[in-house]
Image (tube, rainbow, N blue to C red):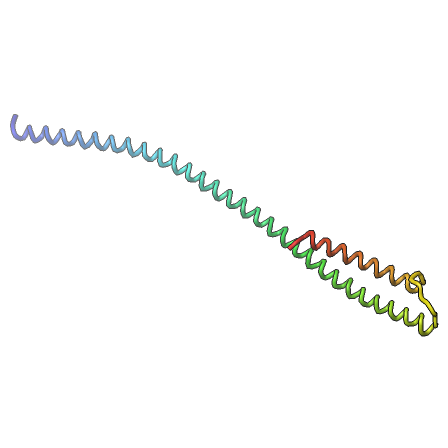
Length: 145
């Protein structure tokens, strides 16, 4: 065999080996791409699951915050209503004192009974206000801190 023929044979063998190697690499690349797509799909679905879970948690936290805000708002309203009732109770107590003074001094009654119509009406209103305050304070305790 002549030197040129041997070189051509070696060259052909090298070319064939390169082709075989390129084909094998192409097949492997396709396999790897398929596996990568599969892994990527799993990772994507896992990421989507995580994002979905985070979104659900955010919605839950938002709902909890909304409930807490409503509770705080209700508690604030109740406190304002209690203060208003306490102020009205103080005014009514002063009115009761004025009425008792009037009955003792101006009308000169020796004794005043709680069943006296002038006094009973004021005492009944005071009792209603005290009950309303107690109910509102109980509701505040239900709401909690």
